[in-house]
Length: 266
Image (cartoon, rainbow, N blue to C red; front, side, top):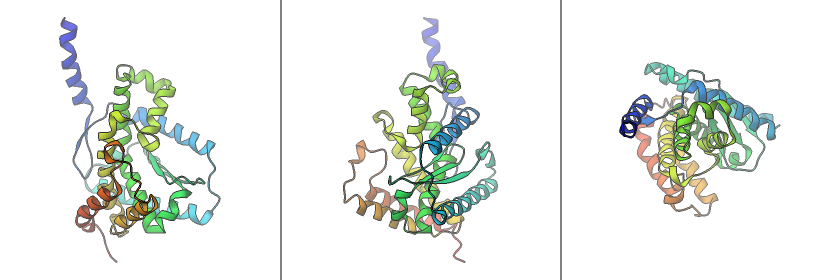
């Protein structure tokens, strides 16, 4: 009976120990996984993705991805240093690669390793569009959305009690949860968190691209093109991990005044 009564207290302690604050938004988040555990595992998975996919040989496009990536990286570093939050980037090792694949996607692993797919470049329509996507994906890593979503996934799958063992052994389930946590899958049990993360990354990404010298007003146009490409075939928002394109565009426009304060038009 005593053991049963102790569980609520243990749960509260876990919540307190796993709480952090997201830069820019100030949202409190639950993340039970330390970067020292998560980032090495994410780097390993990133290397596996590169080994099992074709890296683009289009030097012009690959160079542009790296150019934009480095500019957003420096913007993030400058912002966090100014805010006294540089520790957020502890253990980050930035890397930017372009994968030859028609999939319309891009993602950033915890720790700052980014993958763009050539399929998204026609939607980007140039450097500004790439900056929209790059800022958004890097924002996921800066906000530790991967760790937060992975914590939820481990809880959903009953693995929290053996978290250290799961991360050390890098089981197939743990690996799959990590990949899903950076945008490679959906789970109905954590949809609320996924949509919240996407909206938060949109807001943060606007600010990061603005600091990097890109006009954040390019962001709604990117999502308008995404909407046109899908021909209005958005999944209903309640079963989607992403906000609907129209909802996203409206929210981005609301956040533009804040982002424009960081934009130097010179």
